[in-house]
Image (cartoon, rainbow, N blue to C red; front, side, top):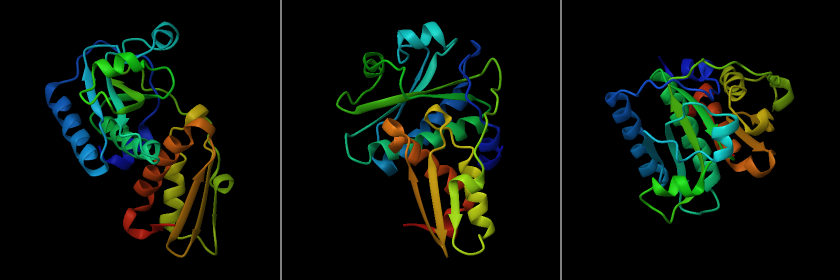
Length: 221
């Protein structure tokens, strides 16, 4: 499955089966995590076989069968949230290409539990991504329209429209899709006004737009 196809098929899944993730898939996930860590200076880490990264409230109210997750962590820098959003989006869509389901948990995670499973204990943890074989494939949610979140000066090229369409697939806090995208020639700007999670949502949104538009077709301004 291609990344663009996986992006369209991925939905939030909160309940998982007890089917273990195959070793070759774990190796693939770890290799991609290493690539993201090296390129963006992060401390992402894959954990399998325990639910210590989930808060007690999440286990009690929402989650079922979550025993594998990726820790979203890195040095405490001003752009950390955006980097985690960008790389987290990459990992979620990549996991979908492997036949796995995911759930971004930005609030109900256990800081103590994640630190027990993180080599760099000085890194800042800002959430986890649960992954595994979903009990269902999840469902799509109501989405805004292209006109509600974007504007292009003049006639929008296909790459811009494709980027905005991909952006509308991006998971955001409370499904707010609080993006504003503007384009002119090959220049694109994007902002996200979703409160506490704005930085993470911005990173997720940038990744989705790039995947849809093709990074070679424009530049961020």
